[in-house]
Length: 311
Image (cartoon, rainbow, N blue to C red; front, side):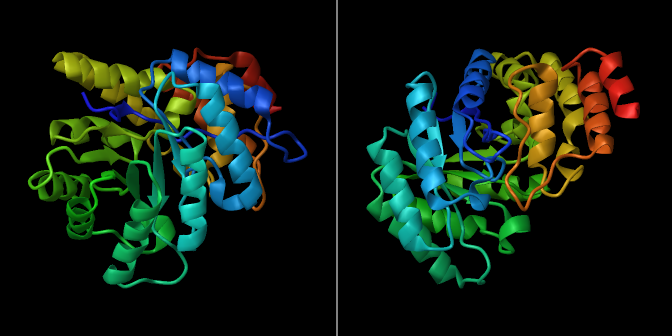
């Protein structure tokens, strides 16, 4: 079993009402997720609101989270920025503080040639002494990373170890698995959307990076463990529960506050503040999320919550 496998959630970053990093609630959330059986934790990704925070806050959060996890599970730190230099600085800081790996999304705003995309990831790999996972999320970057480009990087850089493929189609994940693993079998491919976990595993992938595991880690953890043990009926049953959360990220744009409301609903932590320009979740979104979690079996019907939202 590779060090990085299974369920590695993109952890929400929790804040106080005055937009300071909430260390107390962050620690509670980390502990509850680890208790829930996740196989790693990914901090400062999209769901972690990394692109909305100052550079110095990213350093503070990385240091705290690495220290609090304390090696209980592998810790991955998001370092992607439009600047290659700044991404490398974040990566070196993660290495100095004991992270197990870094994750880099491709630069956004300016569209880059494939050669420039290659140079961006290659320079990070050459200058950060940690395993590097490539993060493909074309909806937010405006530019897809082709399996052929990722293969080129995987063959040229031993420390580029995997791909988080956040695409709304299994065919892209399938191509990544078949194109890259054929020439580098140890390369890891993770689904970026929760609902594609089962399909990714069936096709030979390695796991998922699920936002839902911030509040319902059992949905993806139990699915993954059932699949690994050969209990395919149980894996399908968990997949059918998991799909109830599949459009959670469409309730708000961005979806960060929705995930934090889920964290509050299950009692993992109580800190729903999001950084501007994101805004709190609407009562309608909270009510819909509640119904989704009830349908998924993640919470029992909470009549007081429904009454409060309907008031």
